[in-house]
Image (tube, rainbow, N blue to C red):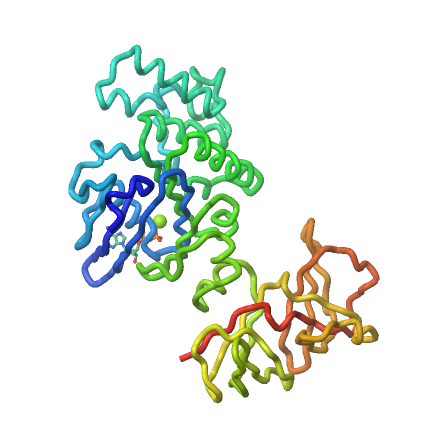
Length: 366
Ligand SMILES: Nc1ncnc2c1ncn2[C@@H]1O[C@H](COP(=O)(O)OP(=O)(O)O)[C@@H](O)[C@H]1O
Ligand SMILES: [Mg+2]
């Protein structure tokens, strides 16, 4: 594989991990590049933590190899791997000060005081913890505690940092702040971070690349745009972003497009898979790719667009964006999301939900 490519710092080769009857990790191959922020995104139980623990050496795979810099480290003990870890529950020692917590890994490695002090001031500076060195964890805010935890993960100058849902216990505002900060540390340090989360927004905000994991396998690996705009599976399309779903039987396939009927309306959508005429497909389109127009202005909807009539049920303000909930005849609903520019719309208005025929993804079902 790529073991002689020095832009690759970590390679996973066909990693499997079985716990009794459970295949927690089921054939993972991955090359992590130097300098990249990589997210492992998946629902609870998809195998993210198990994979991270295998990379760290806290768990041995049932089969497969972990390679670092071309060297097989599959059975190398964790403390020889130059890998740092940060966990969800910060696990700070309550009776140790900030400084003592941070240098703890260096004490374990019997590193002398001069070097410990050196590293400590480096980490304190990087994580902006100046003035807090003598405090105890209970005297810190949640964000400060998390920064101490990060400092401890980085104090040994690891070649790779693993983070397992480190922000899951923080409130929303603080989380958003820490997302930006953690990404900044990664860019400053120029070592790869592998960041585990079940939160798709977090993954999209922070990462250069994302692996979407489910049932121990990667459903898709790609950059943010690919995973968001070109989902390879129904699961990825549903898990990343917010989508409308429509199902129907294919009426016609024409090059890169297919036509199907939904709620009595003929829709033309992109055709990337192998669905044939008569087969069942699911079409998925992100909320923000759907627009609405009042029924009286139907002629303003450009050609090459699908449009479906309905009634505006509600307008939900979400800061920078607005969600329009449109009830269709037959009880279905479509959500359109956009900027709150058209303030003349009101609940009860007759509208058309419309979108470009080359937007969205279709998947063959069954
Ligand atoms: N030590 C273990 N013993 C038995 N089953 C485990 C163990 N660790 C994890 N599992 C199982 O493996 C699967 C993946 O777990 P995990 O890696 O923790 O997922 P995630 O971190 O994505 O939530 C789950 O079904 C979980 O119950
Ligand atoms: Mg986990």
